[in-house]
Amino acid sequence: MNGGSLAAGHLAAALTILVWSVTYISTKVLLASYQPIEILFTRFFLGFCVLSLVCRSRIHFRPWREERLYMAAGLAGVTLYFLFENMALVYSQASNVGMIVAAAPMLTAIAARLFLREERIGLFFWVGFACAMAGIALISFAGAAELSLNPLGDLLAFCGALSWAFYSVFTKKLSAFGEPAAAETRHIFFYGLLFMAPAMYAMDFRLGLARLADPVNLANLLFLGVLASALCFATWGFAVHRIGAVRTAAYIYAGPVVTVACAAAVLGEHITGTAAAGMALTMAGLFISQWLPQLLGRRS
Image 1 (tube, one colour):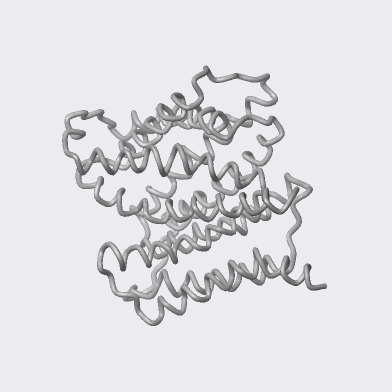
Image 2 (cartoon, helix red, strand yellow):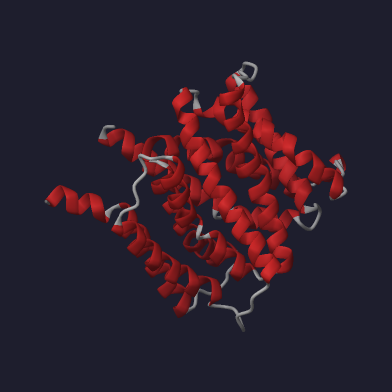
């Protein structure tokens, strides 16, 4: 694969994480009017509709051996990941959940090694992982008065990170079919919405279209549905196809850094010295795992 294609993959991953890191602001605003399951369904339904307009064709269902990969990706990356994360936040501290979910690159590397034989885990990945996790720990717990564990909440957060690891592996396998990113993402969203139906029933979902009359609700749902879901899931899949599941997942390290920066810029939150040190460590970890091996390889 040529350098231009690799650069495009890195750029797509970076831009995706940039958008996903600020979705918490929209979600936090919407929680005043919506239940988590209502936000989840609405954003992915909007994303599915937008992708359907882009594709302008029906979903191309494949033989079972191929179709089950789309089903697995929809279940893992859309339904389970977001449900586990939302439920984890009910039982555990946000700092705990952020730390555990940020371990997704490690879980992705292990899953990719088991199921994608071409994905190798090098020393630089583990050094970068250790550095990034130390930084994320500083960011996550910088404002916490005390550290506490909640077995149920922390287990749910771990299940969310594991779900995302498998989603990355499934999307890498889907690249063999050569389907355009928008069509592939719509296909995945179809199953994600389908598997979401039992949770909608159990969690007392209500449509409540009158809430869309509020321009704040409408703007935030459009941001989550069109940009954060339709576009960013497609660009994430594009990145996985170009640079692999492991290298794409490593960009998750940058999420807490962008979140802290956006909270300071948009919400006026103060960045403490501990958080700043954590941001520096996290970005150093990302550099070590992603770019240092290439730089040393070029010089050798």
